[in-house]
Length: 433
Image (cartoon, rainbow, N blue to C red; front, side, top):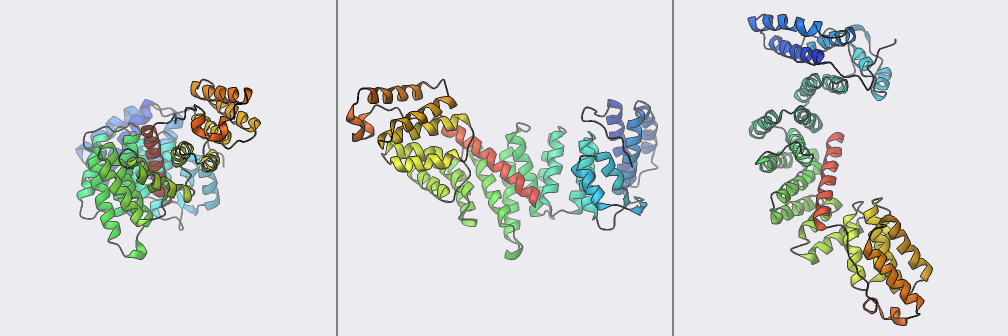
């Protein structure tokens, strides 16, 4: 069966968007038992105008929406033939959203209602009908309140639609509600945190509200039987609490939150990195120990390597510096990081009396990454002058040569970048929930 799929360049007209919103309002009247009220009849009269403003293809698509919305009122009628699940899977994977919606209107004995609502939300949202997408995602979250991802997607949809006050009001209600589930609280908190990171949300008191959600989520999840607990969600909750405290300039409380995460998961590399970065200014030795532990765990995060390598270089531990740089190079493609790493490897190898060709090649690689870096150029010239005049001071160590050793990435930038990575890790965790 061929289906006319809207192209990537088509989006709903204003008339179609208006009719979408009106249809949702009408079905809310019906769900509340007020489908025959004067308000509902008046709305039906208004809907004629937006219907006439649509193209024929939009009208065809929204006839399907009318059928789908019966799911929200509990009186959906399905086609008699059964859905082909392989065809449905292929349609979703190939982004054939209209076809996927058509298949979901068939008899679907093996597909539970929460998943139907979830797939409908994805399809309608992808087609540009984001209010409909929100309505079906809300249905999925209602039907499966223990799914943190569904709650996250509801809040994210609200924020994407600019419904900030609604999102915050729902978060407050969720936090204080007697029947709140820990996954839903985690999902709501993560959505608000993601929105602050993305610049969507900048309301006073937002970080306090997120921490309140996380406190209750952690308490509820921790109270469950041990075999039923999600340790990963609890750890992520503490990590996100730490991020909030950092944004509130309460570093001591952020460190406490990261320490709590490590009590839950002593081998959590992200927590060691976060705590180390938060400790840099107040306790450099403790920060160094956190970074060493993260490196020992093989963390994919670049910051422990970027901080430990120049420290080893400055203390004359040249072989250790080279080893850390080699590990770091496998974990980053950022030119500003690679420029530093190749420069430090050049200086360390110079002090180890390595072959001049090796040292020069590392300096050249550093300059390839950052051609305008005057410090790297100056250090290279210093080394070339030493070789040219056969000065033997290199054997006496780092202090014999006036190297300038610096890190071009600031601790503040490192913290901001790692915080974004923690939020991304939380998103992946919710998707897997």
